[in-house]
Picture 1 (tube, protein in one colour):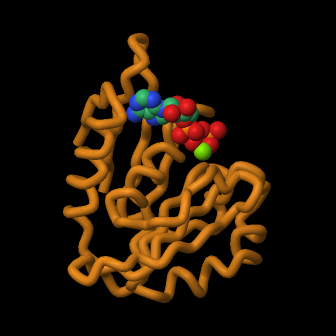
Picture 2 (tube, helix red, strand yellow):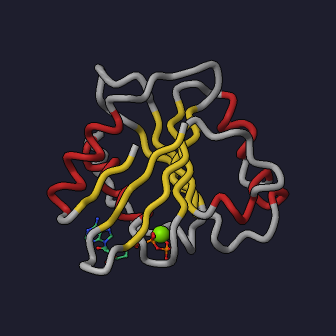
Length: 146
Ligand SMILES: Nc1ncnc2c1ncn2[C@@H]1O[C@H](COP(=O)(O)OP(=O)(O)OP(=O)(O)O)[C@@H](O)[C@H]1O
Ligand SMILES: [Mg+2]
């Protein structure tokens, strides 16, 4: 599945569509976001948070590494949005130190992880792999693999 996104308004529509495709499994739902620096991984996450009504502002967690937001949307099957940016990590052990295994045990967690390549040595198989590329006209192509 592939979508071309030209504006942030289109990204809002796309993030909403994407969220509606997610169904909780036995463990947390892990969504990885790949793409170059500035491709729009954090922008996608921010838009997902907006669509879920997360009030607290979502900043790039590059310095924080991990942020957990409560989802106050009774009709939505996930209770927490977890945003992890692995850019500054060098190996999976550092992700484990953030309590990642515990987060994965809770099926009501929706985890969005930027830079999965950095922690590929311990990462479980993601539910959805998203990759974002920037086109010559500055639009984005978002590809989904399941
Ligand atoms: N779909 C989009 N349409 C237009 N502008 C976008 C889109 N996605 C991202 N941008 C813009 O591109 C810039 C960088 O985006 P963002 O911080 O999300 O990239 P990133 O992939 O998270 O980068 P990093 O690897 O550094 O974390 C931001 O200023 C953002 O507004
Ligand atoms: Mg980012």
